[in-house]
Image (cartoon, rainbow, N blue to C red; front, top):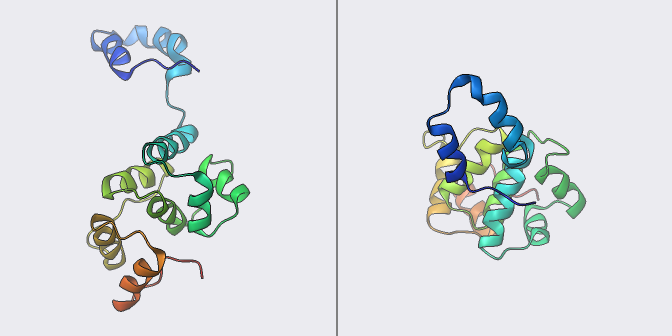
Length: 149
């Protein structure tokens, strides 16, 4: 699928009148973000950029490729925020990328006032991407591990 650069769409919107929106949506339908696909495309873009394979992400996150794929494409929806966070650690995401992924999935971003999230933020900021190290940091502070065990 051919995509249209965001700045082109921005230019179209700049001087647009409200009555012209319907035409804009019709003409640019295939370029607009689909909520369900936005998460998948974002994850895929970041992983491609970092040269990380999806199968490695699933393996790190402790899920099968078929289940991981369904979660990623949002064919199945999980309420397990830790799973999305494990995907992000597996993909060597930074704090901003992790928050964006959580937000796109419809989950709360990492929150500095939450002790467990604070540990995860520090791990991300220090590029601690090994599950046992992340779990160790969490348990040192009496917090629930990130791994599925």
